[in-house]
Length: 150
Image 1: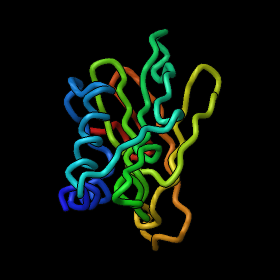
Image 2: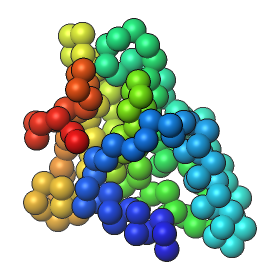
Image 3: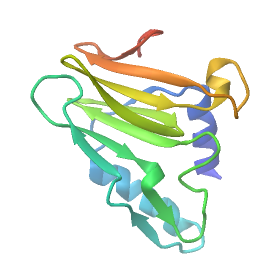
Image 4: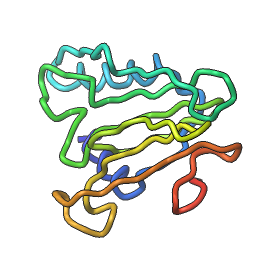
C-alpha cells in the first residue's frame, strides 16, 4: 500500500529532489525490504538496473538506478505500473527521482540528454497517449523545458 501511495505522489510530482545521502545500496535495500514485507517475496535486481554515466559533464561518473529492472516474486507490478517505474539519478550530491515508462540517453554535442517516455497524463492527455520529457544537467541540477527542477 505504501508503494502504491508513493507511486501516486510521484505521478503528481514526478521530479523530486531527495537527500543525496541515498546511495545505490540504500535504494536497492529499500526496494528489497518492500518486497520481503509483501508476503515474504524474493527480490532480484536485473543486470541492467544500474547505469554509470557522466550526466553533468564534470568528468565524474554519475548513476542512474532503474527500478523497472527490479523484480519481486510476490508482486508482478511492485516496481513497474502503468505510470512507469522509478528512475533515480544521483549526480554529485543531488538525488532526483522520475516516473518513466522507458528512458534513453542521447549524446548531443558535449551534453548528455535523458529522454523519458512518461504517462500521457504528464502532457495533459490520457495514459495511452505518448508523452516525452528531455532532461539535461547544469550547475543548478537537472533542467527541462519547464525550467530548473526544485
